[in-house]
Image (spheres, rainbow, N blue to C red):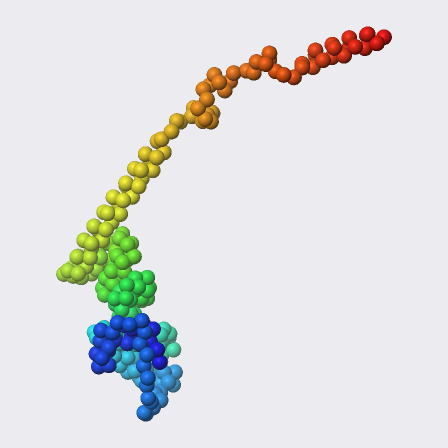
Length: 251
């Protein structure tokens, strides 16, 4: 099979740790196959055990830099426990909820590595929807907000992390970055506003009730009446008198 994203195939054991190619083509030979139990047919305990093992594998892959494969494991668990209201044992329900939150938070960590800040933010929101005081999810959302240049939102989340976890040095450092970014944005906005005001101040300002004049004509030139003597057309009154004279001659 063909892997179009080489980073997903980077594996030291395969000699592809630092692979640099547009795509990687594998030729596989299936020697043995054992079908695993479908998740829908598992008991609650089996689901929790299976999900925990998938999470651990995902963490190992993440540490090894196999981000896409780690993401797949985390998604598997999060999707499996997207609905747990039908769990009969409360203890299993609690475990499933904790595993889902952990995998959603880990998904955010992967997305941050991949610089997919929107998906990282969405994953954090999924955690914070159920646990508004989750420090890890709040901090990672702050990182995503910084990546999206939402500095004010990043500052808000950093302050919340510091409030929940005062010794958190990473949050304090991120807060300083966000404040510096916001200051730079404010500076740019101020300069843009100044340029707009400067541009609006150019050109003559017409008096109230009057529109600006067209061209470079003066008021005297625009309002000057047309000289009757220069008209080429014969006035209607003179034409009528000439007509009456012609009629009188004929009589």
